[in-house]
Length: 236
Image (cartoon, rainbow, N blue to C red; front, top):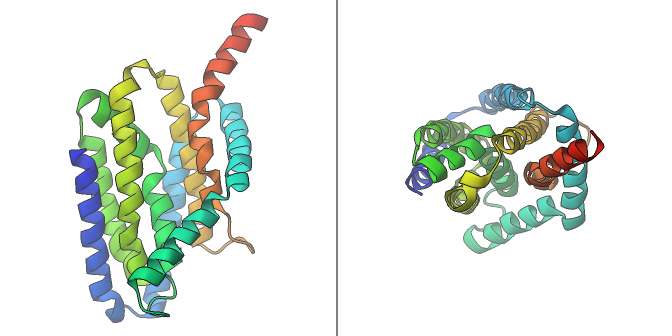
């Protein structure tokens, strides 16, 4: 959990720095930074996505996972948490982009190869290198995000603590029994979702992609790979 705590601290520090510079960054520069980060985010996602060894796994998991997420309405619930924090902790209309910053930063910081692989290395091997590197990246991103979207970005540290810390504990308990092929496909699915985040940041779709509702897809390779291997053994 040490690396997760460092990740949380750097996100909070980055958010504070971003808020300090908020009034010193013009809308034009803030918009440019957002677009630049969107392109970088898409690049990170594509890098993870193309690492798959089973494209069908990514497709099936994305479709089924999105259906599950839409049924549960994960993004709507995340929006609700952001609205609740906004009402409880901020004055009315103090920050109109609170929810956007909270949801965007939460999904970006939680999803992806580095979060999964980093938690695996920390939990299974006590190796914090990946998560420390991710923490630095998240801290820098938090500066620009909070400057553009406000204090909501700082509250993304809460889901990071729960998700990343929980993943580290889970891998510490059962990680030795997980097939590396499953972890690879989880990372590829996570990369695909990150591409969706980048698309939203660039403002490309007419209707914003509900990437939060795609999150269950990350965990479906845990079921897909064993079923695939069983079918291949049975039919082959």
